Image (cartoon, rainbow, N blue to C red; front, side):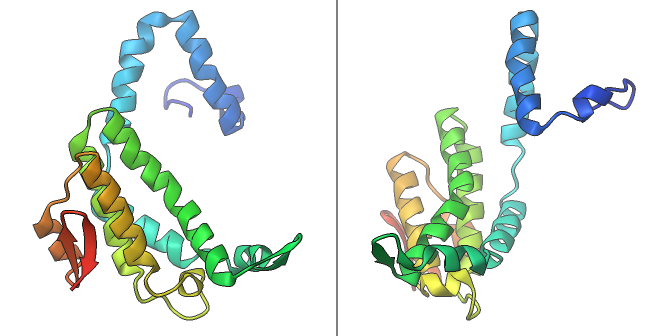
Length: 185
């Protein structure tokens, strides 16, 4: 948080939620900074690489904690949750921040950014299609990556966000881009 020239020992020790609370106060005290901060925010949102995103998301998905699955599956208060259902819920929760980035870019009318995020998500899911036994992804089922990718591509298509078929084919050779989403060749 501190700049290279100005020491900020108190700022450096704030928790992230405390730091984020300072931004509205700063803007209230200095409204002239709004344009600069907006430009910085847009630059940060635009700074996305599909391959880096895919690598990060893939790593996150293949390392989902089995302890979380154990806590959610089986007998729960008054009901039984199948391990597949619990695993799918965990996978969906892991995807949620990336989907948020996609829809945020779309809402800000940044279609190139939205396409890049979507391509990164689809690429990561493609890389997860052969999940090793004993992982949350494996418990979710072999079709889970394609199902999530197809649903998201369909939702994006409905919102006017179109993937480039050549980029999808280059990254996901055994998946095919259809007007209504993705499918397996």
